[in-house]
Image 1 (cartoon, rainbow, N blue to C red):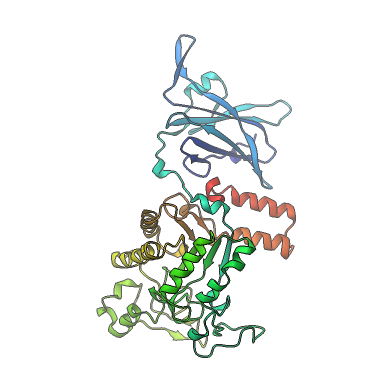
Image 2: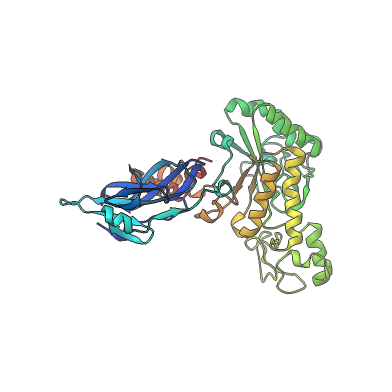
Length: 432
């Protein structure tokens, strides 16, 4: 038996309340090493008289393999808890010709006997607080999302076309500075088409006032970009989408702001005397950079930015004034326009402290609100129920691309790695 491969962690994806009464437990072992696992569980205060003494009264439930990778087996079990507390351990029997059975609990391994169990330290969840349970919006479990880059979806109103707008499909390879006049009216005009496709959720790339065609360099979070329309048109879009059973998710860029914003322009003009000087991470004043010839890149930047893009100065989300401003934005679009979700750009570069406040504000405004963070890597810190509902699953995308499109990995390897991804998160998280 390969004891080093055996792993469990309470209050994690390995021990998660799926519903207030349903606890889902997992255990990891070396692949092919263990023939059977039983979960031993019960109320820690339940006692039974045995041989003149009192011992813990527990239930025993067999576990099954729920996922495999090239090196691990993952065992799972669901137990229904009658009380709001539980302690539990595991009994493992290996696949040797002469099988060995051992116990595994909070302090490691113990003899798989009644005496061993009596004296073992079990894993314990001392009280189930529903406020701590990972909750996700049920509606997202059956939502098919359609992502819309507004500038390139449909031009419904030529009257708001920016200067230099090109005829639709006039270039084989549109450039990063090209405009085609896509707008919100174009989306409204095609809602029935989207409904016929079978989608019931629209994920918009940024629609707020910004300098670029992609709008990730926000100028004003409280205004619709005039290239796309206005607030009345957006309200109509949300209402018409909801009539068709389509949810609406907006893209928020809270890691950084555009350099054309009044806050950053004030810093450039007043330096450290600006009331917004502490809204950013400026290392020395005046804030400056050296151009490299590429509009999106620079060197020797004296302030923190997104990547090396001088036109996207990074916000200091630890600053209470910045927090108040962004949280006002978060609830404004929920309370006034009834949006259903936020997608958070560059979410992994913003502090967890702010995201916890953000989640509280959103769920206070709309309890079944969906929060989707852009995180490119393992995302457990954001997915404990106090920050995001889910993250952009780029790891899944990359594995499908490598296995199905590029064929750089075998189907077996792809399946192993997909299982590895799934086992990193609680079931309800993976469902959304």
